[in-house]
Amino acid sequence: MNVKLTTTLPLATLTLITGACNSVEKQREEVKNVRPNILLILADDMGYSDLGCYGGEIHTPNLDRLAQNGVRFNRFYNAGRSCPTRASLLTGLYPHQAGIGRMTFDDHLPGYRGTMTHNGVTIAEALGTAGYQTGMIGKWHVAETPLRPDQREWLAHQVQYDEFAPKENYPTHRGFDDFYGTIYGVVDYFDPFSLVNGEDPVKEVPEGYYSTIALSDSAVSYIHRYSKSENPFFMYLAYHSPHWPLHALEEDIKKYEDVYKVGWEAIRDARYKRMKERDIFNDQSEFLSVRQSAKEWEINPDREWDAHAMAVHAAMIDRMDQGIGKVLKALEESGKLENTLILFMSDNGCSPEICQNYSPGENDRPDKMRDGTPIIYPKKKEVLPGPETTYASLGPEWANVANTPFRFWKAKMYEGGICTPMITHWPAGIKIEKGTICNDVCHIIDIMATCIELSESEYPKNYKGNTILPVEGKSLVPILQTGKREGHKIIGFEHFNEKALMSDDGWKIVRPGKNASWELYNLNTDRSEQHDLADKYPDRVAQMDKQYEDWAKRTLVVPAPE
Image (cartoon, rainbow, N blue to C red; front, top):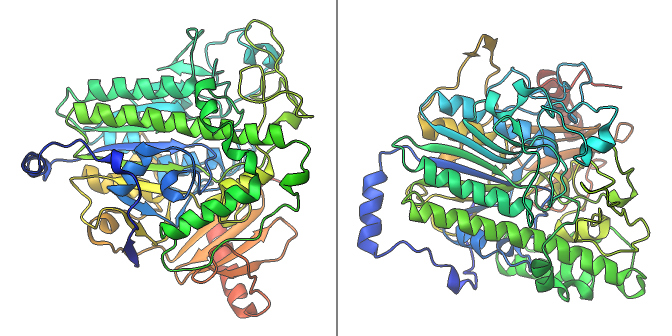
């Protein structure tokens, strides 16, 4: 384990409002033997370097404040895509074991049922049995979402149905006392499809509605309500932001309207420079990958559109951070901040998708608004993104920037797809230095084990008549308290035939596609996977290939759909 105190960030305005030192010490003494509240916050498709505390230029003072007073992880991994990551996060199992090896459609194989199966329990189910209040706000995306003949009209709110997926797979049937959010994965931020309160569809939203604000305000309401009870709470706040479509408030976009006019390379280089200044990878001095596009900004005919698109992306993250500020204020006002473990992370790397090239009116992508106004998918970048009347995304060039310093992006098993920021904050419980950057390899499966330990609950062998698979993760508590833990011997990854495996000595194999060969990287010296060493160390590749095959069989990766 190698941890190091970070360079002090220029964030003078972000001091925690905790009163005089003696009152803080008294408060800590009072909560020393009290089980903590747990607040899990998940961003959607956010890049590795988007946050200020990870090198980004986006204004994120509240998350930066948590990082200054907590711990940042630089090797925290996920499952590479939204629904598999969420299933893994909630259950402490690998995504295939939890039933979502791919997307939310049933392929009729054990690891690919398209919904969270009952091989595992959720954190809410486990902690609920230990007396925790449990609430979820935001994006669910772990239930099978069947398509209907009138899908186009349904997406536009012009027909109504009682359920967006089988209700037995809603959050309120998987351990959550309360739920406000969406069942599907992609939403119109101004008028979300599949919005539910508890189990009831929200048939209309008020004028001026914006998803990120509504989710933040709901979290504030939950906190004030839960704080009236003597029982601790577990709350899962899953923002849609900054997943496409690029939808943001005009006032937020204006903050960034000139920032990105300098282009992809200049922003990427500036992020890398700040990452070095802030010692994000304190064991490596050079870690910037080669740009993945030969396009030059100066001769890009779509400079205005592209700069504006990234400004909208930044605005979406900025508004999420503003919402997190509201949540922190609610915790402070309720006297709960001191003994609340806050975990913030992203479900995967930034997305390279060009969603304006998709077919509108299908799956979860509407082609018109509630009043029938057509939604423009600007394939030729003919209208600027941001308002509800457009449906667009960043594309690969900006995704490469957002994922600085890594290569690739969402759905790939390179670092750009599976390694994302993770911040922990817990004044009463973190014993290592504030602002520490942790180099330990950790994974989304570790969150369940962490919650089990802190809640003093038991992970069940059986639950409601179902045999439960053993939890795969390892608790993060030893890291937070001592800076050390015994990590995973191996960690495996698979998504649509993209495969990877990491060993505890820092080596990683990657197979980018069904017919590709294994690549080999030494992440101890090459965090950005620039140097494929497979030809140099064939015996190591063969050994790790065998480990991967054993892991894949054990975790239901195989058999896989054709």
